[in-house]
Image (cartoon, rainbow, N blue to C red; front, side):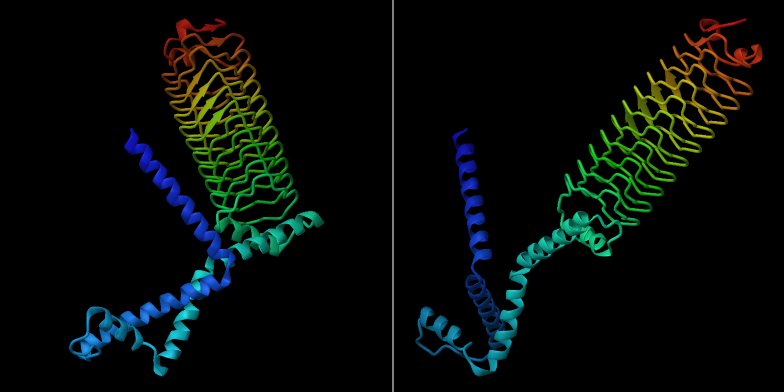
Length: 371
């Protein structure tokens, strides 16, 4: 235990020393020059030694001690023919040593561009567009930034931290937002059509009335997200997490939900015509008066869900599990219910649900329905 504490103290001391050296290095230009000169000298010295060894050139004299020989070797570098090489090498090394300082300067200038564009209320700013991409490439966080109504079409902000940002009414169509963090961000009425949001963190995000038509949200986390009234036509939500998500009155025509997990989701009056829910899991979800016309619900787990007044016309529910779900006044006209599990389902007052459909199901005798 004592050994671990000692090693930890030594490590902390080493880290503090490194930080002090870095600060000293950044603060004093002359120190960087000295370091560059020393490195350049040592490089030329090594090259000279190799050259002397390959050409069998003798620098040390007979009888010289090791120290005297080393001094002769070091002094042999100081020659007129080496000045040009020494100067070029020193300048190159100094340029490399100042890389961090130049990056910090570029970051500062980029932030100035972003802040000035935001303050002036300009929606389209190529300079801000480029500045944001440059800042993100250096791993700079945008947390809390206001980009309201900004035109950022086709921007690349992959893995960016956009937590708590204000992007309401912003244009982000065709943008690369793969693996971004948009936790608690405001994107109300934003345009995210055809955006790449694969594995994005969208927890607690506000996407009310936003346009996500054709967006890719594969494996995205939409926990507690608000998408009320949003356009999600042809959106891809494969393996997405929707826990406590609000999707009331959304347009989800042709949306792709294969293997998605929906728990405690609010999806009342949503338009899910021709949507794909194959092998999706829906638990304790409110889908009242939603339109599932022509939807693919094969092998879906729809347990303890509310679908009263839902339109399931021409929907394919083959092998689906509807256990303990409510379908009062739901429309089943031409719906496929082959091997559908109706154990505990409430089908009272269901529309266009005939006996042949029921007989093709499993456990329909344990369901409640009007004969």
